[in-house]
Amino acid sequence: MENRVKCLLYGALVFSSLAFLFFVIGFSTPHWLESDDRFITVSHFIRLGLWEACFNQWTYYKDYTGKTYDGCWWIFSYEYRPIWQWLNPPWFLGVQVVMTLNMILEGVSLLLLILFVIGCCPGKTSYKALFFLSGLTILSGLLTACCTIIFGAKSVIDRQWLENPDQNYLSWSFGLIVLSGFCILFSGMCVLVAAMQLRIESQYRETEPYEGYQMKPASTHY
Image 1 (cartoon, rainbow, N blue to C red):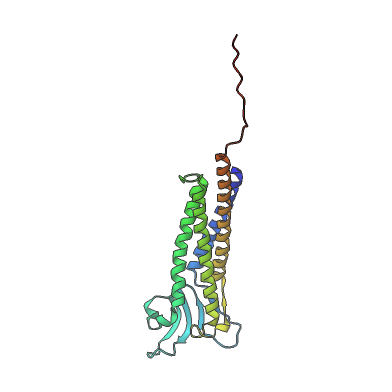
Image 2 (image 1 turned 30 degrees about the vertical axis):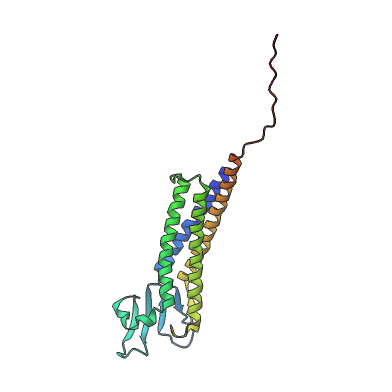
């Protein structure tokens, strides 16, 4: 059973490493949402990530200064200050905050899992510690799922946000975040099964086998 637990933890480590790699790439690249250039109608929106937005000679109709936005800029830069509230609706700010916290959570989970695998964690034989780690990992996957569902839905139904939402599509950075969510959930399930195996093994060791009643030999006196 010990070998089975090790295999599960190694599998969890592989999934968790891939999840963190995909998450960091998707988190830092500006290709969550892109404009499809196959449409006849010219869109002034180019692409958007969590931290960067790109436009092509676009003017916000509520901007009294008539400023034209062209090129790619950090989403909180001074360049986008006049349209900051429109560019960052409350739901998008929520996704940014949760995804930032989620990246920290995935990093902590990966670090703890590495410590479990190499045997440096004091509670490496404790199924309670593994249950805690599986809870952190699965929580990270659920948060990723919530953020991707919200962003994917809002990018289509929020008509007050980016122009021509029907001409935009979810791009590869968003896809990497989705893959990261699946990988981290698989990792959490592996850790959960390993914790259950350790719990069964711990209960088995605590149960002493029944040896039955043994009669003591009677002493003989001559």
